[in-house]
Image (cartoon, rainbow, N blue to C red; front, side, top):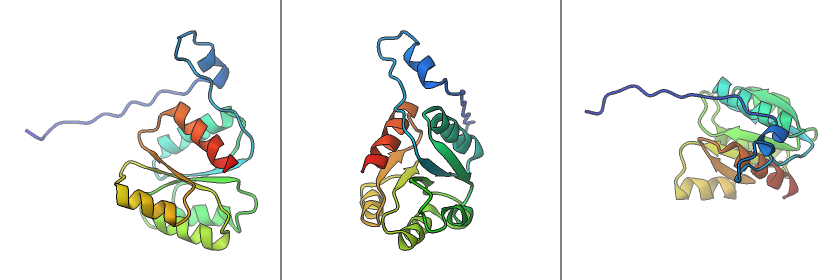
Length: 153
């Protein structure tokens, strides 16, 4: 008992028009938008999937696999409209990266993605300036909508 193997299967995301044209009653187009989004996640397939989804929605996407690289690309934050930041990464974690980004640019919009949320930690991240929090595994339609919503905030 307690033993076994876990598999994760990732499928490529269809373009927004293909999702809407699927013809199923609950098919919803992905929320389109514009701007520059920095995606930070140490899991390369997840990072690439988020980038593809955002590009298909019309965003310019930059990416980094860890906090130090994210801060380098972020600079003073003036060229980045939104950061999608994973909390659990080796080296500099998401919380420290969030704090440093907000020090550099107090108006920075940072959307947190995490597989580990508890009521207290989520509230703490929002107090530290996170624009919002999305739980993994991501629902790609919800993800696109949350990005759009975060950019309007």
